[in-house]
Amino acid sequence: MYIVFVYYLVSITCYCQGEVYKDYKGYKYFEIGGNQKNVERVIKHLSKNDESLIHWGSVNSSQIILAPHLISVFKDAVAKENLQTVILHNDVSEIISMEKDKSRHNTKFSWDNYYDINEIYKYLNETRTSYSKWTELIIGGESYEGRKILGLRINTPYEQGQRETGKPVFFIEAGIHAREWIAPAVATYFINQLLTSDKPDVARLRDQFDWRIFPTVNPDGYHYTHIADRFWRKTRSKSNNGCRGADPNRNWNYNWGQHSSSDNPCDYQTYAGSEPFSEVETRTLASYISGIDNLLFYVSFHSFATLLLVPYSDSTEHVDNYDELVSIGQKALDYGTRVNKERYDGPGTAAETLYKASGGSMDWVRYKLNTRLVYTFELRGSSFHWPASRIWEQGEEVTQLMLGLADGAQELGFF
Ligand code: 0X9
Ligand code: ZN
Image (cartoon, rainbow, N blue to C red; front, side):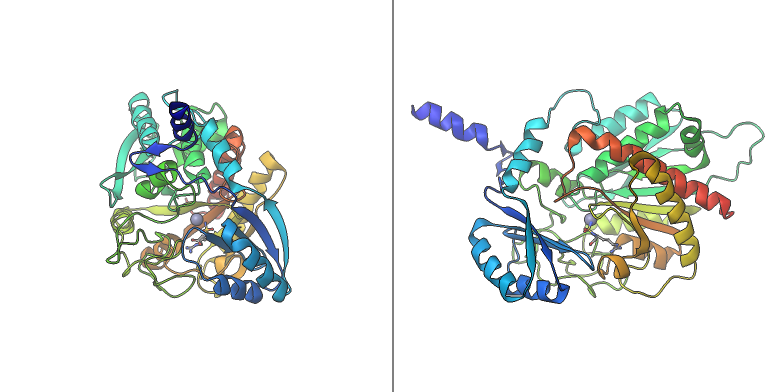
């Protein structure tokens, strides 16, 4: 009887490398409607810095995941603030355990499954071996726990007669937020498309650029979402008071710490770090990016607002080539509808469509390197979840989005 009980306990909870996978049993997921100022007051009233309250929102919508013990006080607070709530999921643990059940390991890498960091890096290694004439492994930096920020460069040789001045560089950064699993998944899907697609426009896209694609620029955080906490967002560095991680998309050295940034190292979501570039991941990646000549596109993948963002994220003022960015972005979104019929929102600045946020990679690249074509895609999903069996849909959509960016830029004479 005792043995059966112990077996049962072990079978429902994954003990990986000493970590217990947090099950989020009984956590509820709500949409909150109404004035955003009132929403902020509710969040402040509950004042939680840990995973018992995970809140995010845009200028006109707000969502929250709440631990069971906070639900009655939350309900009282929203009633008092005259806010409406809709329950989107009654028990978040069901989504998480469904994802876990689906994950199969030691099988061939595919796009109907989410993989942990080692398997993604193995895929990059194997791809590099299979396409050795076109690809090379690139190291964009390193992580707190000693991992590499590994990426793949795809740079097909020029055909005879073509100019050899070097192609424009197209940089893709995915997975800066650990829990946004769809971002690394579509990054590898897109790599696979570039290398294997028999569609002439995708082959042309491959040949037009010197690609630098980094599927997981926050490898420690990403690994942690696989072994311990599905909703982890930050890096895994240790603060003086013992709390872990900083938000790597608040840690870049441009207007650091100003908006949507916390100075509390224990903040579960948006601690900006002890200083700009306190995180080894952002510091080393910034240095890698600074060394790229001919950088034309810098594109970052996040989830899950279904939105295309242009710089800056912490100001409603527009950059000098805003109109160009918007027209190229619109072409991308037009192409995206070929797959899904539905269109992303935007393009627009984060400050106007989502919320003001400082210290992000996109803003730093635009301001410090003056890279002209800089975008953030917020992919699709719900509570950072997207069914593994449907990764291919967003993979196809992203392929079209990238094609639209390239065609839009070419039409405007960027290359
Ligand atoms: O808050 C963020 O960092 C992004 N949204 S998310 O829900 N994926 O966390 C928005 C990023 C906007 N861009 C920059 N801040 N650069
Ligand atoms: Zn994100």
